[in-house]
Length: 102
Image (cartoon, rainbow, N blue to C red; front, side, top):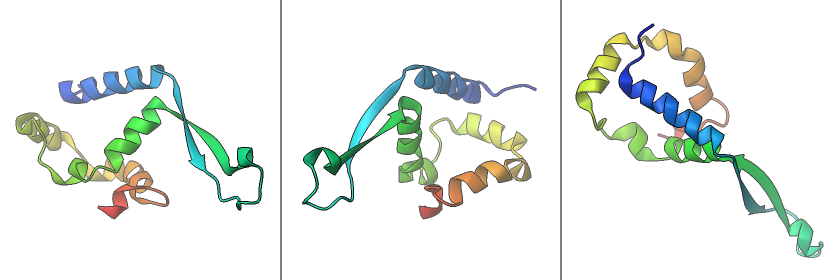
């Protein structure tokens, strides 16, 4: 299978992002004000890849802007088979997927 150079670059970047480790993001919990202040915050560990992926998935430009390299995109599009991607598409727009908002 021949991999498009642009897709190969994305895959390599993804591997680099995954290998960079994790980032802890603190988020307020739903606890009421009378509870211990430590329990008012819960932490969830997101790895760097998840953070980057979320940024890409929730950016409207990802879905609405034309690709930067239109020639490469058109070459990629020739080999793209929608039915082969049904599972991946369902993950993106199914329950909890952010793509459905666009």
